[in-house]
Length: 319
Image 1: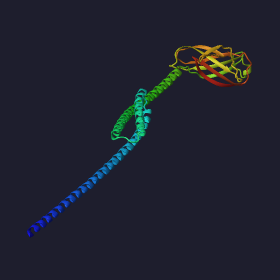
Image 2: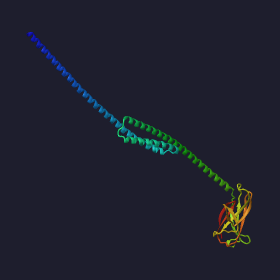
Image 3: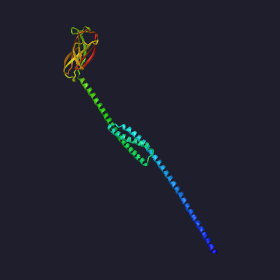
Image 4: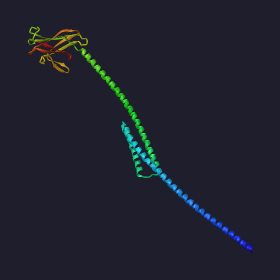
């Protein structure tokens, strides 16, 4: 009986121990589940926070890129303004028209791009990439325009230099032509003057009724003009009509000798005489003027003309 009691106690102890073990296992499993749940919740919360942070970072990056796009668009706008100034300097009208058309098209794209950047506050990475590509394309196009303008300006500068050189050469040539013309003109004048009759020993003498020298001009009935024609191999030979003009002290022409051609007009003379000139000296040539008006003492001017030249002009004081 004692053995049975002891066996029952032992079984009860073993049962109690087993129950305790089950309880602890249950508690352990429950605790582990709680820990795992807490850990899972923490991991979930951490991942969510991380994703939110990542989204914020990505949005900040997109905002920065969008701001950078706005700045690039403004820079591109300024570059187009510089291009506009360069375009205005192009001299070739046909080239300027072509550049203007290209410029206006690109300018409209820049304005549309700027409007798009302002109208939408936030953009996706795909939209930003698309706008970035458009800006790069426009900038490349602008560089092409600037290179084309620089090339045209260099060509224009070269042409301007060539034109300046040609103009300078033409100026020098014109100067040489003018100088040569002047030299030829002077040579022609010298040659023409060389052909003119020379006159020396010009005198005027009052004569009385007997053909003798009269001391007082008031009593003279004739005025005799005497001169010599020297030898001149340059003067064409032949008949030479010599015209004289005698001007009184009062400035009156002593006329009645007719007229003669001079410098495209007709001039009155006092008297004239025709001689045969053979290139040799002719001395003692005389021309008479018959007094037909009252004469007074004073200075008388005597001029000789021939072949449309004034040969000589001299003043004489007659008492």
